[in-house]
Image (cartoon, rainbow, N blue to C red):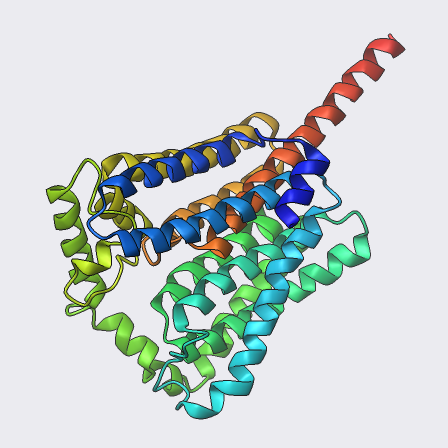
Length: 360
């Protein structure tokens, strides 16, 4: 229904190049399904991909309107809050904090890791995009609340992904806002706060952290199941390099009967080298586009979009994103936000040039 309303009201098919490349990838996945090793598993993934196409289309069309973008981000924010509430109500009391990790059927550690990544970016970008300075300032203060929340979730989920993505992401975003693009006053505050945190942490008893399951999983990776998966999926892809074993079928060929937990390798093993290349092209085009725009116009928003792209690419080695409705649609939302912002800025620059010419 939402898809039909969006299409009828907009009459748009070619939304932007990022959506086009994603659709091309999905057509290739559909093609490789003709040669699948298991029709049932491939049919299930094609059904998931249909949902991705519909969601991404709705998101990308509506994100062309600048006023709609915050409400689209709010979808993921509400999803996250509901997930946190579910964990508090149904999971926290059933596990030993720091010694066990959440592994609920409805909400697992991986889910919380990527959702926390998205929410971190949403709250940060809210602190840049609102015209109202008080709302912008409130979001900037709210961003600091993400730090203790993420630490709590990191211990709760024992997720290495959470640490690898969240820690550098928060540090980079804070550095850009308060140092690279900040005033002299904000730079002093940044240095003071950073040094104070280091001193405070040195005085604290961190045994609850150093003896946690998170640290144990992070330091003992020699027998990590993901390393075995990497080797197995590369081998599967090398033996089936053209069309793979079929979308959704990789799990049938791994020792643990699980999917690759890596977007690139899942595509390589399941749909062949072309599927993986199309996804690499999508990631590369997005990142290069944002970096080029920043280098030309020196607008901080383009750099923020580029930072998101860098961490999103890294996150692909931890999970399979292309067939997950929420995960891939958020990328399309950020990519379309970048396009909408670019067109707005180009319009403003054009109007400024016209006003200068007329004044002459």
